[in-house]
Length: 112
Image (cartoon, rainbow, N blue to C red; front, side, top):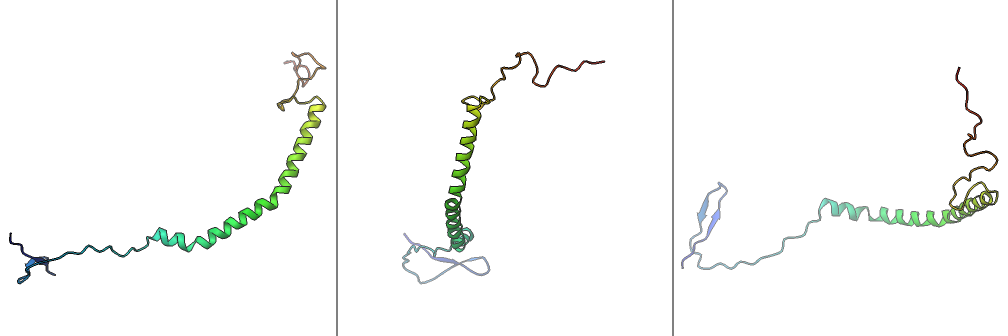
């Protein structure tokens, strides 16, 4: 089998290269060029790390305040339960001092 080697010229035409008897091709990996997204991720890494540190510090600083607020809310709920104003699920308890059919806002207004 006879093969011939052609190269593409600057004018867009294929030209035969005379005198070539053999060709060896070596596949080389192209140089990895980082994408714009990869560059952005690398450039903003210090900012992300600083934000994570800030968020962790904020959580630790806010923890005592949130725990104190939760204890206060729980104490308020216990007081409302003991007073008989809410049930165990936190729903308002119906008042026992008036019949079920009577409005808690008084009798209905009469129209003229």
